[in-house]
Image (cartoon, rainbow over all chains, first blue to last red; front, side):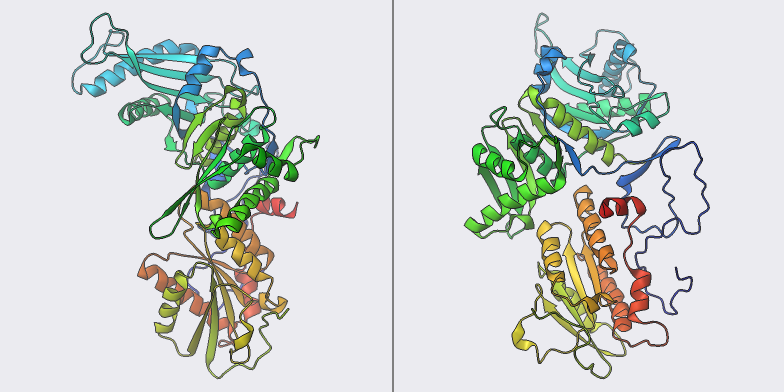
Length: 367
Length: 186
């Protein structure tokens, strides 16, 4: 390439130079290619697409195709009580970086420490003994069976119960906060590349008051040296969910496909586009025939599906939905909101949803 | 189909013409004002369009267009789709240094990153540069105008001793890192 720069200055133009000038040797033992970040790296580069795990370097790519949603009678593998807990609420999503020294065997002691921490934070300045029956009771449970592959760590479910202020002594404590950490079908190369002390449970779902969520997050950050961040679902994730859920229609009636858009007009226009499930399924079937023995769905199919819906809407209302943002997708199998809130409707397809969300969490996680 | 061609007309003395193509028509006006008001030693004509092809009626009266800028807003899919469909109305000679992509809202969170990658793939396949602009502040608009003016100066041939449009585009064209390129070449 040219080594001479033009004589006049151009301001800062974006040039992506690949490794020119930086002398980095890839060690022979590593199977993955190392991305060297030279100074010419443009700020256009999305930092969340490439990152380093502690001590190793891996590159995670956005997948362009994935397997179709498979129904699993999950109650075979997982305790139905646990499933009932997951299906009930609306969950707010965050991503977590890998946890250092997290042991699934020490859940009871973690529970004690967390409850002491919460009580201490609530009554700042007063010393609290670990193990005392304080106002908050925390339980950590391991939900076995949700993990898909060998590299996935087991899901951990956390509940915080407390007695309401004016309760009689005999009243049972109410659950005020729930949360769970999970990893379903995480990228196996990435998980294998983690150093042995780290456990990766990248998806964190919470339901309950924001103050308790922040307390739990800060306890985790102190105990396991990890970082939390909010996970927003971008439009391509929502598109995948719409397509995957529609594809499940013959096996399990999704009852409706609702898409909620927001158009940037003055004042903003909110569009709720409800589609009859049979029509949606016929559209999906014409794009990706079910007789296809190959189980993979390509992103082009998803894009064709969404653009079919958008063209139909345009034909009737002369509004281009692609000029706005897709905020929410919901079917009877669940709903997902752009801000990172999900609701699980049907436990049979829970693994597909969680696998997609785990992937989002892994991609969103910073270096 | 009449394609917009860069060399079919005779250039005017000390004048350069830039065409801003934007589907939303919001940044165009601000950018045009900033470009025209900026201090420079040559005359600049700014033409605005929503999409290509340009109307046939003004074909004779239109001056030679030296630089075509596609303004893409990353917050809407439609913006990118409209830019893509407009690209097919350009003569292939235009891609030798006369086309540039201007992208706005590239910093707005994770949902724009994938669109940014697709814009960069599009630009790389056509050998054009990509510039990011900040359109909500006056400073951002004037900075973008200055950069466009610099590129315009070269593509209009005002700086023959330093560089030419083809040379500049070869240097500044958007390139993809190798793993993105793998996806693209598949």
